[in-house]
Length: 295
Ligand code: HEC
Image (cartoon, rainbow, N blue to C red; front, side, top):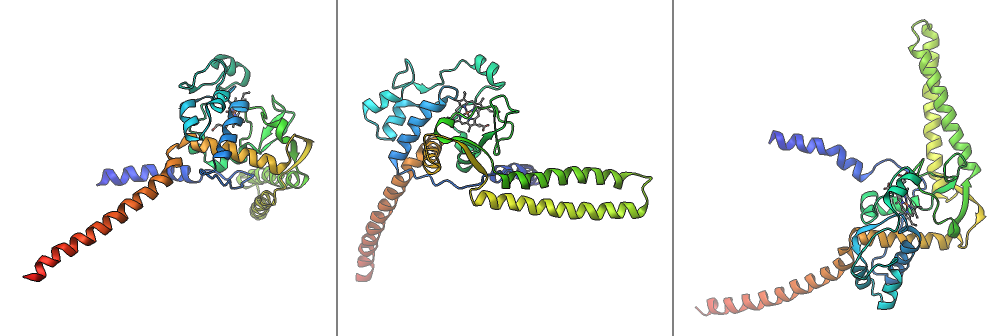
């Protein structure tokens, strides 16, 4: 029993991390509809065209995708990269060693990413690239700071910068944090007078409050969709881009959990089966009681 309790206690933080993790912005929700085959098909097409150069889907076969997404043979053939065959898994075209050299990391397999990171995380990530000239590919990402992936969908989305509102609030947070560090030094300083320490502690509390408010402000800016300003237009409007990313996420959500597509159907059949069983049970009961009552 003790062992069981300690095992549960040990796993709790893991579960908490899986459930929440840290909040990142933008923090929008994506609505994935597994019944919308056109959306899934569009997602598959985008994945093959824009992602599979670097990322594989080792657990996914073209044939399974074709079947699940109702693709015609011709459409299925168009999905297949290079020399591949319908029965192959969706491997990437890039050599892993070369990728490591170019990006410093090997772009990981994306079969499961929607389950590991969550649909919303992937949706926000793909919409959160912004210009940052200090980075190797001139872009950074608010959901994945310091990311090693270039903004692959820039020709669709265009290029965006952090908005002035966001920059102003971020400035409040970073200067506040720097000031707190200085004040903490005063608090720790053994030669500082009691009055000075008290003053520093009050100032820290005030700054922490300001930072907290600024963080809520970021949440509000994100909610209003005002984190970024487009500075170079892409081929899509922001709405079209969001839809494209939604389709892409829908496809990744499907590959991470292919049974989801079928689970509704299975659920309906199970209910029907139980209903038939109920009717049979009712008549069976009537049949039994008939004999008993006679006696
Ligand atoms: C030019 C190569 C390249 C292409 C093309 C590419 N990526 Fe990436 N991607 C990377 C690299 C490199 C990383 C690792 C980033 C890091 O760890 O800093 C990455 C990371 C990711 C991650 C984060 C994975 C994680 O959990 O850490 C996701 C999600 C992702 N890519 C999705 C996509 C999608 C969707 C596409 C297609 C629209 C795509 N990538 C196209 C190179 C690429």
